[in-house]
Length: 260
Length: 353
Ligand SMILES: Nc1ncnc2c1ncn2[C@@H]1O[C@H](COP(=O)(O)OP(=O)(O)OP(=O)(O)O)[C@@H](O)[C@H]1O
Ligand SMILES: [Mg+2]
Image (cartoon, rainbow over the protein chains, first blue to last red):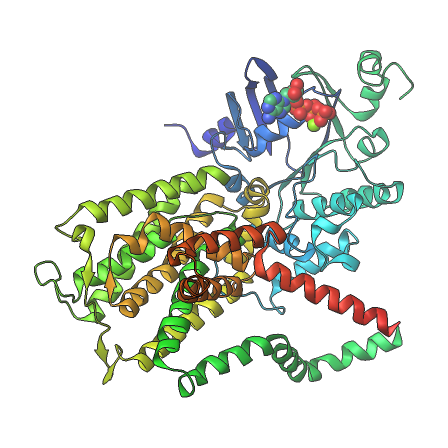
């Protein structure tokens, strides 16, 4: 019988996210091929790679949207490989989607409210939430954070694309996240909004780590301390932003040989 | 800036009165209609009371359970009429009927809750079976369940008394009132229908209801923000089944009989037509659809005969009406009403300018 400490260490409790030998097949296509990846709590990591490299699939395996076909996924030491997505969310995992997945026929406020409610108790409550309830303050704060207070009571389906992207980010910040996965959050944002996004990311409390997939190097490399490069479903390089930028192989494969 | 500051400062005091008058003006049409329905027995004949308004309200309740699932949950369940039928059969078998060889003659306060329980258990199970499916597959599974129940009632004689069904299923006597007589029965129906309507409206803005709409719009995102979508959908089926079950019992008490046709394929389709014609966008649509249906059912036959056509063609009329409304307004009568309001509002704004 091993000691508790040993068992926790064996479980990799030191890591926020730990993937071991993760593969994901879509038919014959291996979107992920034997990925092993660890991210510490509070660590901020960029995942870069060309189109179809498997970046989104990597996030889907972590959240359970598409569970891996092989390998294990641990979240803060716990094996969550087969847990449904909502169980992982209740453990503090959050994500945004590359293509906005919002509640089109509900208002912005309802969208954010659902995200806050999903991260709390009373999801099945038949009693309406009073406007004085603490959760409504969190909802209002999140709406202000992403600058959507002007359209808070509009239906999401009526919002401009950029506003939907902002809302996408707000939904991932609800409740008490421990780790967030951002899938190209800056795509479709104006330069101004990109600045806001960088401000939001850098202002996150230090204990909240994240993985960000981002094609815009100006955004990506400013908000992370480490970078993972992917190609054809595999990881081929990990390092600090400066190393990655300088790496000739990376430049050739990902930056198209241009300057960083 | 200064203006808005005083505005917020004053709000806490003015809020109560404001909120109440806002609530009053927002709900004035509903309150007016409610008042009208409460006062109706003073003016209406027993026929209008039970066979027009009473029937409308009961059918409306059962359609409301479908509206709740389809409108808020995006789940077109064709099993709601069956849930109502099962509740109706249960109260008949457990309670009183003209068939002492089958009915157990338990008192209503045992039979009615048990009947609701049985029907809700069935409705929830149907939900568990179909909640995993989407769109056309939900329709197919629930339709299969509905037809299975129909053929069971048709062919089983030991419990359901087969083709004949049951007659003389009386409403009970309690609190010193004979609920079988037209006016008390009307008030019982009005109370249950009103309560279900208010409950659905209220729940639609409660966490459970908003989450159901979230699951309708985007089940994958719902999972990602922490909701167990499957459990939520099944719970919605259970909630809807309660309303359908109460409606089913009232239907039996109102018609004084139940037979396989009560929850047959035709009745199942009719219920869908009622809900869609009324409109799935708001709970009132279920009752509007039911009213149109009852009026057609009651008078189309005579009207057809009057113009020299076969009276049995009233189904054709209902079908044509369905086609016309769905063609012109996919969101039913409610949709027509809403567009008309919007147009009126915009033309009023135009005059103001
Ligand atoms: N649900 C799916 N079904 C089938 N194939 C899929 C699915 N999701 C992803 N793939 C395939 O897996 C591979 C990796 O896709 P993925 O979306 O992970 O790439 P990505 O790195 O996020 O690319 P992008 O930069 O374009 O977002 C691609 O070839 C893609 O076509
Ligand atoms: Mg992607």
